[in-house]
Length: 121
Image 1 (cartoon, helix red, strand yellow):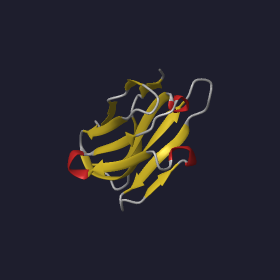
Image 2: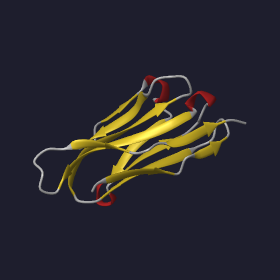
Image 3: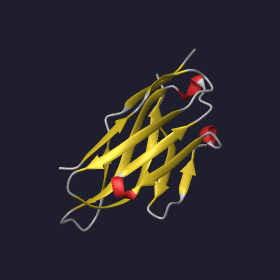
């Protein structure tokens, strides 16, 4: 059974920083890529950033220059470093990872349950 779990959200003041982690565990053969999404109150879920197995990254315009996505393949973990946070960054952050389980020929996306990030003074 594969699981993906987010951690290290919380409350931060505007201008502050947080680093989110997304760890995958279980019967994993390989991971093709991963990403972070967020859902603000009353809004639809949106892509924040993603990272391919090649290391290529993609960011929403609203976070370019402030957020950095990275991955540690040895730990099956994807990170989201968030700097210069703004109140509009508030929301529930979800991660996913495209994981090929042991014994399978193709991957599927596994999602975490989400973690709350609140940017407020």
